[in-house]
Image (cartoon, rainbow, N blue to C red; front, side, top):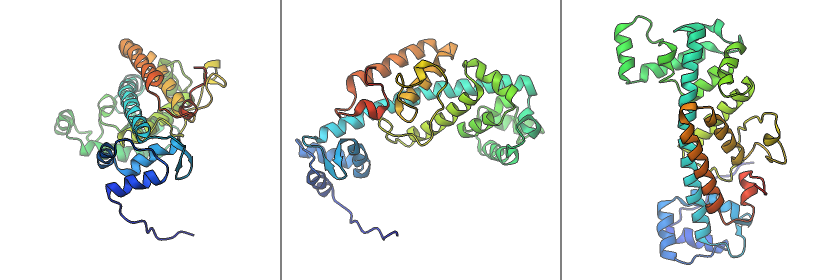
Length: 293
């Protein structure tokens, strides 16, 4: 049975007092008020969840600065994840443009016969057409004014405007032979790559909305391939951040043009996680990181 929402608006001082009533230690109240004015109380309280002994009761000694620092850590981590996702997404787009185009020609993606029969190809293509119509890219305008197939674009052009989510769906319903060709680039089985792309679309959406990721339990998890490094106890599971970082690192290693980036990205992630992780006793477990890693 639901009830009407009746909680009142709270001023910044009242928000801070509420946190103190929950047991939060506040050293510099002026700085804390400034921070709550900058970061919505509702978002700040989400970062506080990891520091609670029970709901609305912080563990003794928990400071405002500890929760604040967990936000800074998460922000830096989210930036690194987003940076990596750009490289991976562009590589995937290029792989589909090249390999699918080679197999099926410029407009092979417009034919339902080139996908599994369970694919709602009409709906997918309609959405791609909508994205094409909305695009203000110069190359789209040129194609529209020059060629009769518009709003269909050649696959290598379509890959520049298709959403990451639509690309994920496209790969999931490709014929097995086409999936295998693309997955081979990353030394993965097609089903694993499909799962990873789907998970990274979800991760990208979280990052785009500045959502907390460091201690989040994923709603959409990446499948873990066979192999000791992907299974317990080396990796506790696939529901937390550490699995995502491994997935990204694995994919980056196969982006041959980005080897330097891949190496430096891994070093920056390790430095951040090793030296700036939140001052919270279960932080490693909340990130899904092995305790002895």
